[in-house]
Image (tube, rainbow, N blue to C red; front, side, top):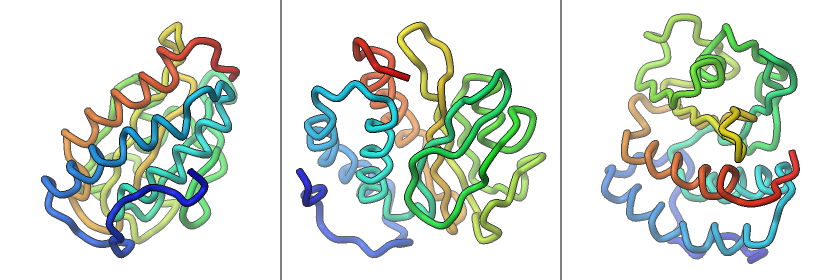
Amino acid sequence: MSEGLDLPRVDRGASLPEADRLARFDAALPQVLSALEGEGDAVALQSTLACLLWEVFSQASWCGFYRRVAESTLAVGPYQGPMGCLRIDFARGVCGAAARSGETQLVPDVEAFPGHIACDGATRSELVVPVRDGDGRVRAVLDLDSHLPSAFSAAEAARLEALLDEVFARRAGVAW
């Protein structure tokens, strides 16, 4: 699978209708799971997911992981896009809120989110999904940013929650 995903080419930053985005995700899902089959290292899984989800979510300007490195601190992990924030405290930003609460954060307008951290000043919307281990502990967050407002949907969030659960929480022996 070194060639990436077998999906129609879409320009980075393209605004597709939600139905097209969901169809794109659904077409990619078996390929993503196949690429991850047999892998148990959390960093390798995160690196591969960041790369493949970058291909799926053409509206994303940043796609990657922030890893829990202390009780209330995240550090940038594998990602695609411009440089991310290096450290994020659980008390700050959308990523911090997802890590702190353990709940997915779907933010259609980051300017309306109290305490939003502007790693990229052009970001307009964000989707952050907690990554849990087999014991249910938040070990990381998946962060998707977009320069477009309302770029992500609740249906996309639900699909990502299910994918991350399958890859990290239900997979035996993931090495964190």
